[in-house]
Length: 134
Image (cartoon, rainbow, N blue to C red; front, side, top):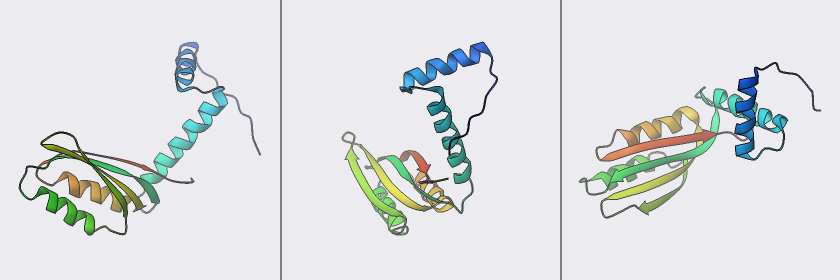
C-alpha cells in the first residue's frame, strides 16, 4: 500500500533537489525521496554491528613491500566464511588493487577492512556495505 505525505521545503532547497534528481535520472520527486529514505534506513541499520550485510572491500597496495601478498592472503583465509570472492588487478609495475566481495555481520566486515588497512604497504582501503532489505 502506498501512502502520501507532504513536505514543506524552502524554494532554494527544492530547486537544488530538483537539479539533483534530474542529474540522477529520476522521473519524479517521489522516486527520489523513496530511494533516499531507503538508503538512510539501510545505512542506519548497518551501523549496528550485528546486522547481516553484503558489500565490497577495495584495497590498493604496493606489492613490492616484502611479505605483503602473504599477509593479505593470510588475513583473507582467516575470514573465508565472509569473503565470497576476490578480484585482483595490476595497476602498474608496483601497485595492485584487490576487491573482496563480502557477506556477513557488519562488525566482522569492518574488522576485515581494518585488518587490511593495518598491513604495512597497504595504501588505501575502502568498503561499501548494503543490505537486501531494511
